[in-house]
Image (tube, rainbow, N blue to C red):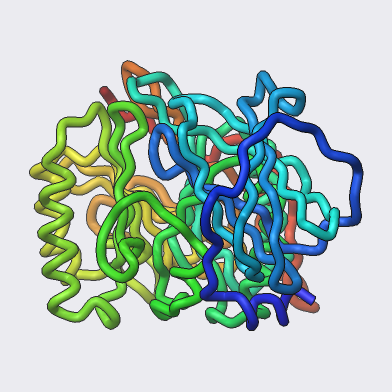
Length: 389
């Protein structure tokens, strides 16, 4: 059902505000669509998306968490489409919002939520993970564990899907449902997304550049700077890489309490088969150093590693569900800590005096005579890193 909807509506975007009102709704039919998922793209704006089984219309009911549902407002789309993306404006900064989508058929989505960026600093936490492709049952394990966290948003560092087909996107959204309904979701491009138009159709991201303005992006969370990059040189080519690098220098030159960068390909890695991208390291590492980047998060390698180079902390977190990969016994220069064959994610706690990065394990892959099995882990951090303010 979802697959046919994706084929029909992958690149179609919703439009317009039809009505604002305060109301409640009656119970309706079971929810037949993918999503909803949301991304706060600024202190007063967020985009809510969903993928219905057939082209149609719907209404978003939303309110600040403290006023939901009695004080809910409604925004209705004005044109039928399978993939709908509706921008909510006039939101309050630094506030958690609760929302629900009701289709014209009467079907109601689960209740979901997102938080808007504050205008000034306030302590918060966010989650980072990557490489959820291929084994979506494993992705579901990681997503369910992450959904139980208190977090302002989540960043996915690429390779969301095995390939950018309707069936793969359906598997991704279905397996990640618990997570996507609890927070804002910000991805960056991996190589398995292939720079495909489906990625750009599905995700509305903060203001950036490149293709559709979503190929790379930045967002301020109070006085904390978040930067998402495209590290796929094969698609960027020389012109795109130069454009993005010029943009990167300009964005990182901003004053910020902390600066976090997200990309798919790690600059440095002890992965047995992939040792990092030397070209990107030569180009971008000096920029990160010059502008005082607090931490850089990447995926691509299906393991976990923490590398420190010239005062910049680099974290590889590729344990979101893809086939787990071994680390080399010979570690890359600056490698502080590394773990392989563990599904995991990273929790980043941002405080006034410093930042704490925690690697949270979900399950360990153990080889048996008949194959492999997953051993659930308690979730106690395997590594805790304190980064000064």
